[in-house]
Image 1: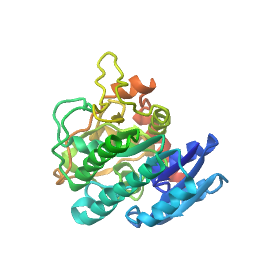
Image 2 (image 1 turned 60 degrees about the vertical axis):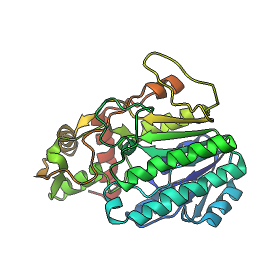
Image 3 (image 1 turned 120 degrees about the horizontal axis):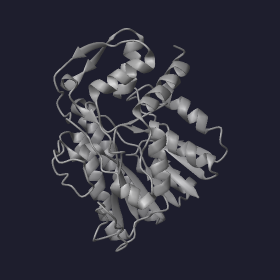
Length: 336
């Protein structure tokens, strides 16, 4: 099949594109190579993808409709996977305009491309952040998500509802998946695991917000990619609702649109997570306890029931194994 994937120099886009290329598909990767974090890491990811003759990279910003349109012309996509975004909960407090440009204008541009090419399936990344500080757990796809705590979360929610409108108006089969704290080799430097490992190896303090009382539903990258690949052929169809024990389908009544959590439903406390990082590194962290940061949520906790009903799969890698894999990659990549 022919894929257009946005964000192929990013953490998740790189891993998904690599998986699809290894399976023999054609992939056009669209990425802005923005300096939000080390561009050399992004370039290294793209260099690996460039080894595949069926990979074609196009550099451009999501908000540049002409550049995105050119990438689509090159791809002539059967499927679009929209992963590119301005990421980061805390950075949205510093530079909100970047989120409006990339996550609102950029997502609209992607929807216009999907409309033009009438793709078989549009899959678009959302985030567990849309659940805000929800207290009812686990988080289900049909739970209320109208109280975002940051502009980042608000733009991700907006992306979902924008995509729903296009699915309804133009009959574009669309899946919006909500990611839960994805980690693993080639991960993002702004994420906690990367920061913890880097600081511990340098014998510098790690910053632990919320006095370490937060919990996160960590999702290993290989599990996430497996879930996305299994969702590719499961394009939503109107009135084709799945049923099963404890399953509430998020399929829209108004169009071929569905929201799916991608998380294992096994949240881990921040302090036990740091214990796991210390064990993988074989050295203790210098812990600097801090209050909760503005915009942080106390916990994330996915219900994987719908994902399991649709694909027969849910994330299953143990945090201990995933952290070890990340540490092994980090030591090799940085030579430490």
